[in-house]
Length: 109
Image (cartoon, rainbow, N blue to C red):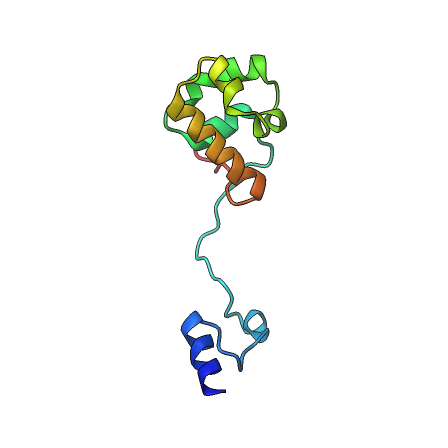
């Protein structure tokens, strides 16, 4: 029993609190929530990633069309569009994060 408590304290969730962490307000706390865009298209997606990807907006909108198709596009299609390797890697990396719900473009002024 003592070992279990030590291991649970080490991971940050004492066993005596259990599921009451959320009730007590001990869950994850973020002081500032991000302002996220409601509608995300290809231009907003590339602008959110940054790093100069905005230059490919016209090319991707003309060939691919919408964000849902961009999210399932493979690297060979991006290569055929003339997008360089670093940019392809960034697009595919953030597309994967966006599909999983781990990242969304922020609404920056």
